[in-house]
Image (cartoon, rainbow, N blue to C red):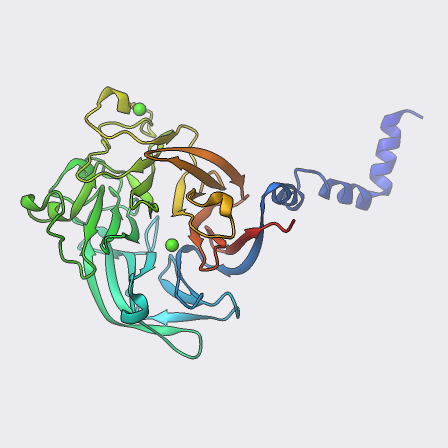
Length: 385
Ligand SMILES: [Ca+2]
Ligand SMILES: [Ca+2]
């Protein structure tokens, strides 16, 4: 019998068989995910799901705070699975890339209870800007809690139209100062304008006052907050074990960056970038203007970086000192290896979903938050054997 007839008979008689054969195909999402996971050196365990999670941080007791972009701060205890909302977050300008952003705890949180959080807020007319506030965290027996003594300690200026490139990642440095990524709100030129704090890395005291040793103090406000300038969309700040600050930037087309931040440095955006504008207009590359600090790593095939830690735990001893960057469009976890002031992408794990945030747990596990409306919180632990 000719083969086409056999095939058509089989199709007609056994549709169930064909359906099941298709589900084992590598193009099937579940099968594909299993193949990827088999190649990882870690096990990824789903611990919870959140609605558009954006950032997380651990408290000293091993529980965590997680922000949801629409404006919720959630207290989650991975040990018990218990979760509750923390009340007291102000109204946020939710939409586009804006909403509730980062959350970190004060270096002396255990004694003073301060947490710091960033968010997009509405301004006059059709304008918005990022704000950073601190408040005392009071947990209650139900698993939730409340904020008290809230104070806004920093704001982007000026507030502008649009809903993109707030940045507003937060990190406490080994110097005890609060570092803030203030992205350029998709307005380009403010990144070079010292009358604006957009497109800058900001350094302030824990109460919002200005450190006397900032590089541009003599220029008055807001330049006195600025540590470095010429930045685009900064969604990751991390200090290494030597106290050096690294940041990554979502660049224009073909120009994602990893930068080593230097006091008073100008990183050149939008005058130079190894990428180019999305509308096709070229931007001169870094090597044409050596007065601007060039990125240590440029990703021409973009990863869309979000979230950043430099690992210091013991669960993955081979990765101590490595950077871990979440990838949005690349749906990946990127490992960066450092060598003094140099760095390179060492490894990339295909996670199958957009990764918004990376954290290190108190026990040295790696934690990832997926982006989106049903984003999973994944705990990464070494694969047994
Ligand atoms: Ca975090
Ligand atoms: Ca270019």
